[in-house]
Length: 511
Image (tube, rainbow, N blue to C red; front, side):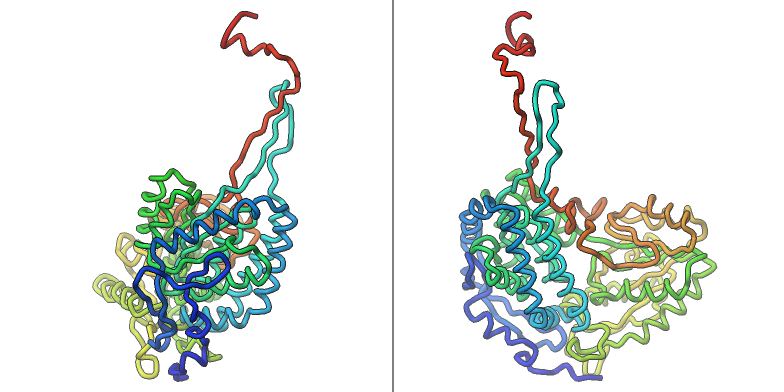
């Protein structure tokens, strides 16, 4: 096993890069003013990466003021001008792709092959998509709907957006929050998770290098309770977009409601993986392992609940456990690594707690432990398969957010779809079948914002991402995201030039 004990500067010289601070306000780095510091830790080694001054309310105020000052000029730019700036932005990101990949792997523990082939290319593609989409902010066609008036619809930017992003995909979440907002003409203050701020800061720096004006994109690195709540409740913030747990999302909604601002929530998930008895078993097994273990399972759309029709159940459990055993756990920077650590030791211990409690009511078929030896100092946990848990058990109902897949049998199609829907969440799901009618029924009846057929996880910039039920509301990515980041205005022109209109008699006078 490769030893992950490399010195942090060899992986990414973060301390030198962010010597001026980890707040990005009005086009430059600065130190936070909360009076407290936070240390970013490499979860693969336990080594310190960067100690920085956290943002406090004053920093949030400064960032919002910068965004507010930049808003008239950016909102007044033509769609073509914003599009050109975003195309330049995509080019800068592409030039810095390796830098981004290494920083994301360092702060999150993601294997380099994941950041190089998924996180970074996806963010670049997202930027290129919104560069094009910026030119297509259109309203309804003009028409004479009343007979005496011409109506049309304008889409206008909302103002300053205050967004909060999670730690599992720091770069991609920064892109998902920032790009539709600024493509629509808004300005933004983003608060990344304080444990993973590096690539959000680099994203903002790249935007400045591409010529996007100072103040259009601002980053405040601070805690949710201090910087986050102040941002959500700020009277000059017109909209909040939050991605994170359902529990924290409820608090964000509570704070946002006090100032009656627009709110977009992308919350937790517990995605079902529904395997019918006519499915390609090998394809389902490979899809389950990949879908459950991506990003060490720290993905709100990850496959977490596999429901397998009884004729395939035992074979699915046996083959999935065997394939999980081949997954190479190790240093994210080593070429052969498949699975890195969880984002922190706290998260690793949380996942281990779910698995340890499950031993009392289910069968742990594979994994179920942290590796030792060279990996003992990191936040690693082996790929884990749990079988025979009850539908109402904790492992089936709660979001574990780690490399853990729970497998349950079902008998009839009706039962399988009912079980798939039997959680509070509804973010993503997949159905596995060779029968187009069976699969199509599943896509209709499973209550989730995305349903894959014979695959699980792929996302594309052109299609929306968002949930049902306790997984939140609103959409990231795609042109549908503009519904979150624009105001719709109805404009109505009188065409008659008549002073005393017929409808006036309903208020005063006679015909």
